[in-house]
Image 1 (tube, rainbow, N blue to C red):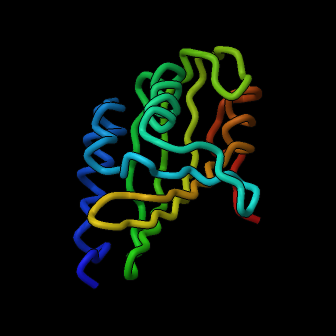
Image 2: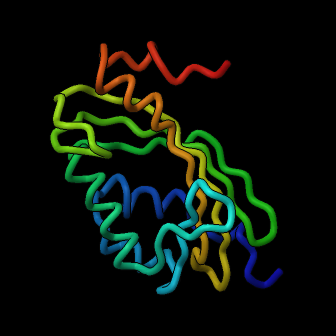
Amino acid sequence: MADSVHSFPYDRYTEEVWNSHNPEALAQFFAADARVHSMTPGVVAGTGLDYLKGRAQSLFNAFPDVHFEIEDIVQREDLLAARVTLEGTQRGEFAGIPVTGKRMRVYDFAMYRIVGGKITDVWSLIDMHGLRDQLETSGSPSSSGNFR
């Protein structure tokens, strides 16, 4: 277990990339050929740092005040799972939703594979239903995203 995930600095990654709104910092934490897996099993949505930086920048453009709060982290061997709350105000188009100026608060559940101290694979499930409900309707985080 020389490449133990236990040594991966997830809190530093969250602060230096997401809460500092710095997509360039992704290179410190991701392998150059890291894969972002889609919601369809076995399908890779994108690969590499440029892809990751583009996705991060689109989030920052849409939610310039976005903040990530780590709720839970579970680590085992080369895998790390995290539950994170994202909160921010929409100031740009996002996922086909025009600017609303409304706040959103949603969960992101992510699983990471870490090899040699760098993330090589990520599977991320963001509560897009809750995000759409909040931005397209009342904007109240309590009105959507409830677990049933």
